[in-house]
View 1 (tube, one colour):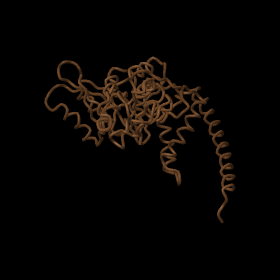
View 2: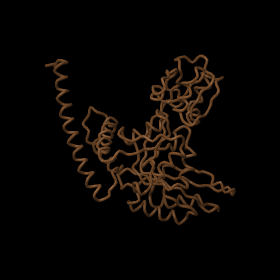
View 3: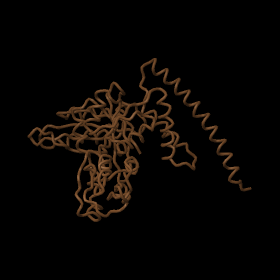
Length: 360
């Protein structure tokens, strides 16, 4: 027998009341956990534990909710419970409405204290000085490659990586009117301009492309001049009262940016193994024939997969390079530990950037 709309709504209301009671029960348990952590000095935030919880729920999910829905819902639940213990202060490239802010919320949930910064350098400074406990910075885009400033800042920073999140980036052209007519300047971060260069060349070939500190800053500036447009998120458009003149103008329909979550080791040490982990390194090798090949041998010998290999000039004037490497696994695994030990012996410079659960 088909139930009426009113009957279904009554049932949904009943389930909502049950959910509310269970969520408050969970929050009370989280408070008890927080008290134990305060007594023994344990960190409030444990990314590997949260990753395991979400992976376990996704594996046990009978549907109809999708795995991504489970992740979003439980991240918000854990964020709200975590905030009862202590809200996390998180720095990111601001102002409000940037993709970096969106990545921070995607990773930590909404219940955080926002610390918007004017540049990637300021994000690193905030996390180093204690203005923020954590920072969120972009490290690479699937079409434009690595974010070089972030990699350079990692080299001499005391911060390490404790997590990552991957964001599906949708760039929108924003301005005071919904038309493409009369646009003389397009403002956005340099990476966004590069990710939209094909669309801009086709639709706005005569408009000046002006790089600014962030996409949200471009949207803010576009709100001051009818001849200017910004490239940014829908949230940035709403923040600054702009129309979307063109939706999803990125050249790659599946444009994704990977963000790293960083902090001082004393704020949070290296996360324990979650079952799906990554080790990030910076290394350099002696300038001799075959040196780069040699550092790959320990990985093959011990069966460790390399998922990223990038080079950046050492700026020594000697044509030397630092290599940024991501390895699959966790140092608690014997083969990974053995590969890292052998690799270190071959390097002129060796730094572990972080060990952390990988995002889907």
